[in-house]
Length: 241
Ligand code: SAM
Image (cartoon, rainbow, N blue to C red; front, side, top):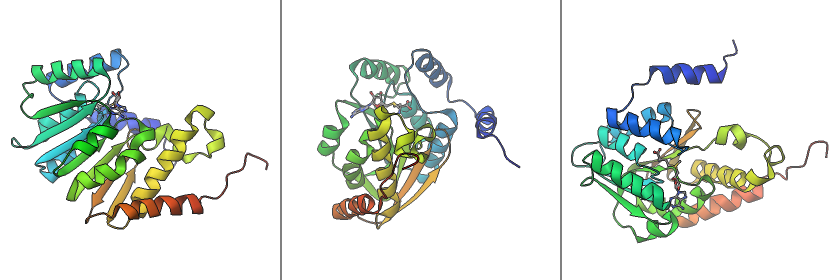
């Protein structure tokens, strides 16, 4: 039996319980204003990991208006803290307002700026990292994210299937999206082929990759996996060539 994946997604979505009243209000406002936020079924998986891991610290890369940070805060233990980052000033302002309204300014710290720079300034270890910023930048953020992830910690990366684009040949995606396409493929390859990482790619929402860091990761191992990926990648020819 072939089941339409759109129908599966909408059925799963119909089962989801929303977050708090405030979260629901923020979600609706974000959708109305075209702010990209986590999909309900992916939020459900993310908060499942928050409950499972019982984290002391969570790092989020890509805050937008604070919706997913607040969803995580509703699932995390009382002593847990979230550090989140956002580079768009208007979204930073809105997120700060939303954290104030939720009474979460003590547990959620929002850093304003480019995550590529901010990640380098952080120390300590995070039991859960939620990667949800510009998709083409994930591979660039990865070495720092893995440095900051605790052993036994989970890296949860959203939007890895890019509405199905990542499955396609680079010639089937629009020229505008080819760089993102190549970088996301490289990101997934590295997550799957680096010693000490264990990754599952889940076709939920826009695709989520969940990665367990089993032990300390050698940054050279990441580079090696990326190089191997470039070597193994068969040259893709346009249709008919
Ligand atoms: N996690 C949020 C949620 O589900 O509520 C949604 C995040 S949205 C998909 C991605 C956000 O990452 C955008 O608001 C964008 O401005 C931000 N962003 C993109 N690249 C970034 C970067 N290099 N540094 C910091 N923020 C970035």
